[in-house]
Image 1: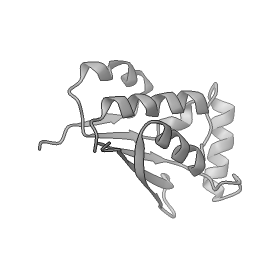
Image 2: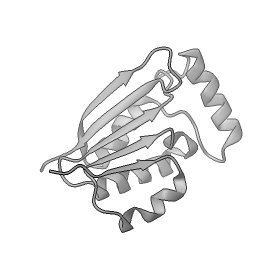
Image 3: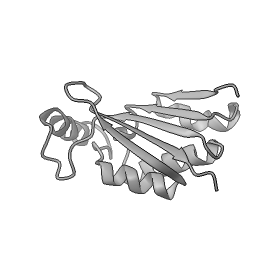
Image 4: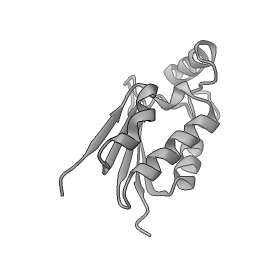
Length: 129
Protein backbone atom coordinates (compact mmCIF):
# COMPACT_ATOMS: atom_id res chain seq x y z
CA UNK A 1 0.00 0.00 0.00
CA UNK A 2 1.30 3.46 -0.85
CA UNK A 3 1.54 5.89 2.03
CA UNK A 4 -0.35 9.14 1.67
CA UNK A 5 0.55 11.71 4.30
CA UNK A 6 -0.98 15.04 5.23
CA UNK A 7 1.47 17.38 6.92
CA UNK A 8 -0.32 20.27 8.59
CA UNK A 9 1.55 23.16 10.12
CA UNK A 10 -0.85 25.89 9.08
CA UNK A 11 -4.42 25.96 10.43
CA UNK A 12 -5.71 27.21 7.07
CA UNK A 13 -4.79 23.83 5.56
CA UNK A 14 -7.58 22.12 7.51
CA UNK A 15 -10.17 23.67 5.22
CA UNK A 16 -8.78 21.88 2.17
CA UNK A 17 -8.47 18.33 3.48
CA UNK A 18 -11.58 17.10 1.73
CA UNK A 19 -9.91 17.98 -1.58
CA UNK A 20 -6.86 15.80 -0.91
CA UNK A 21 -6.33 12.11 -1.54
CA UNK A 22 -7.38 10.10 1.49
CA UNK A 23 -4.27 9.68 3.67
CA UNK A 24 -3.26 6.85 5.97
CA UNK A 25 -1.16 9.13 8.17
CA UNK A 26 -1.83 12.68 9.32
CA UNK A 27 0.94 14.63 11.04
CA UNK A 28 -0.05 17.60 13.19
CA UNK A 29 3.16 19.39 14.12
CA UNK A 30 2.82 22.24 16.60
CA UNK A 31 -0.73 23.01 15.52
CA UNK A 32 -3.26 22.16 18.22
CA UNK A 33 -1.88 24.52 20.88
CA UNK A 34 -3.19 27.43 18.79
CA UNK A 35 -6.77 26.36 19.44
CA UNK A 36 -9.26 26.10 22.28
CA UNK A 37 -9.97 22.63 23.65
CA UNK A 38 -13.27 22.53 21.72
CA UNK A 39 -11.61 23.48 18.42
CA UNK A 40 -8.72 21.04 19.00
CA UNK A 41 -11.28 18.27 19.61
CA UNK A 42 -13.09 19.28 16.41
CA UNK A 43 -9.83 19.19 14.41
CA UNK A 44 -8.99 15.70 15.68
CA UNK A 45 -12.54 14.65 14.79
CA UNK A 46 -11.93 15.82 11.22
CA UNK A 47 -8.65 13.92 11.16
CA UNK A 48 -10.54 10.80 12.25
CA UNK A 49 -13.07 11.29 9.48
CA UNK A 50 -10.33 11.76 6.88
CA UNK A 51 -8.33 8.67 7.82
CA UNK A 52 -9.32 5.16 6.84
CA UNK A 53 -9.68 2.52 9.54
CA UNK A 54 -6.18 1.60 10.64
CA UNK A 55 -4.89 5.05 9.62
CA UNK A 56 -2.65 6.88 12.04
CA UNK A 57 -2.24 10.34 13.46
CA UNK A 58 1.04 11.70 14.76
CA UNK A 59 0.87 14.78 17.00
CA UNK A 60 3.99 16.74 17.94
CA UNK A 61 3.41 19.32 20.66
CA UNK A 62 4.87 20.97 23.73
CA UNK A 63 2.86 19.28 26.49
CA UNK A 64 3.03 20.15 30.19
CA UNK A 65 2.40 17.56 32.88
CA UNK A 66 -1.18 16.99 34.04
CA UNK A 67 -0.87 19.65 36.78
CA UNK A 68 0.72 22.12 34.32
CA UNK A 69 3.75 22.55 36.61
CA UNK A 70 6.57 21.05 34.55
CA UNK A 71 8.68 20.76 32.51
CA UNK A 72 9.62 24.45 32.74
CA UNK A 73 9.69 24.95 28.95
CA UNK A 74 6.17 23.57 28.59
CA UNK A 75 4.85 25.75 31.41
CA UNK A 76 6.43 28.87 29.91
CA UNK A 77 5.08 27.90 26.50
CA UNK A 78 1.60 27.42 27.94
CA UNK A 79 1.64 30.92 29.42
CA UNK A 80 2.94 32.40 26.15
CA UNK A 81 0.26 30.57 24.17
CA UNK A 82 -2.51 31.81 26.46
CA UNK A 83 -1.22 35.38 26.14
CA UNK A 84 -0.55 35.31 22.38
CA UNK A 85 -3.49 33.39 20.93
CA UNK A 86 -7.23 33.97 21.03
CA UNK A 87 -8.06 30.65 22.70
CA UNK A 88 -4.94 28.48 22.59
CA UNK A 89 -3.14 26.60 25.34
CA UNK A 90 -0.57 23.86 25.76
CA UNK A 91 -3.02 20.99 26.18
CA UNK A 92 -2.28 18.06 28.50
CA UNK A 93 -2.10 14.33 27.76
CA UNK A 94 -5.49 13.43 29.30
CA UNK A 95 -7.13 15.96 26.96
CA UNK A 96 -5.42 14.44 23.93
CA UNK A 97 -6.38 10.91 25.02
CA UNK A 98 -10.03 11.95 25.46
CA UNK A 99 -10.19 13.79 22.14
CA UNK A 100 -8.54 10.93 20.27
CA UNK A 101 -10.91 8.36 21.79
CA UNK A 102 -13.88 10.54 20.88
CA UNK A 103 -12.57 10.75 17.29
CA UNK A 104 -12.35 6.95 17.02
CA UNK A 105 -8.67 6.45 17.76
CA UNK A 106 -7.09 3.82 19.96
CA UNK A 107 -3.64 2.41 20.67
CA UNK A 108 -2.51 5.82 21.90
CA UNK A 109 1.24 5.98 22.57
CA UNK A 110 2.66 9.03 24.33
CA UNK A 111 6.43 9.55 24.09
CA UNK A 112 8.00 12.44 26.01
CA UNK A 113 11.17 13.81 24.43
CA UNK A 114 13.39 15.39 27.06
CA UNK A 115 15.38 18.47 26.15
CA UNK A 116 13.65 19.17 22.85
CA UNK A 117 11.39 22.01 21.81
CA UNK A 118 8.71 19.48 20.90
CA UNK A 119 8.35 17.78 24.25
CA UNK A 120 5.86 15.07 23.34
CA UNK A 121 4.98 12.82 20.44
CA UNK A 122 1.46 11.35 20.55
CA UNK A 123 0.62 8.55 18.15
CA UNK A 124 -2.79 6.93 17.69
CA UNK A 125 -4.45 4.52 15.27
CA UNK A 126 -8.00 4.80 13.97
CA UNK A 127 -9.98 1.80 15.18
CA UNK A 128 -10.46 -1.05 12.74
CA UNK A 129 -14.05 -1.70 13.80
